[in-house]
Image 1 (cartoon, one colour):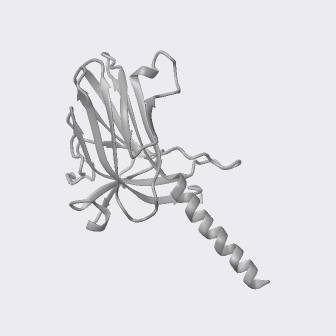
Image 2 (cartoon, rainbow, N blue to C red):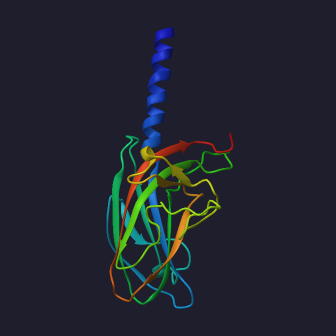
Amino acid sequence: MKKLILLNVLVFSVACLASASEIVGARVDLHSSGKNRVELTPVNAKGFNRITNVPWGSANDRKYALTVGVKPIRNDGKWHDIQFKFIPESSGNVIITIKGNWIAKPKGQKELPQGWVLFDNITLTGAKILNGSFEEKSTDGKIPGWKRKSADYIVSGKDNAVEGRNAVKVCFKHNMWQKIKVEANVEVTFSAKVKYAEYVANPEK
């Protein structure tokens, strides 16, 4: 009987680990910023499930925003390539937000589960991004080029970065963003490396 109970616990634990790696994914959101609104046309995405204009908000506003994801990332300790392309229909500013995917919370739980993802080596063609390798770091802990809600997003150490010493750790709620300039009808390609970091089922505990 004890062996059966231990076996069931082991199976349940393995299932939990598998399910966590199956729901933690990388996500990138984009939206037009400023008075001159930029319509964004999705082209394609590699390493993601989809790229599409957002399905939420006012129907008239959806063409000005894109959501890219949600691709589960295996908890295998490896970096994975992601890439997507879009075309701005006019010149202007676009905000790119890197995050983890949205994960539904169980009934009765106040906070969303957190699927943490590491991002590194972010590059753009067709536009310019600042400090995409996160190696630039100011003395007050801020990350040049990026905005975020917390100071503890930088993860340092050679084992935590593709190259250099820094990567960033984000989830759906605790994300980072940067404003970029785009030119009319110039296709923009976003490329990055992502890695599974952590799954927190209940951040309240």
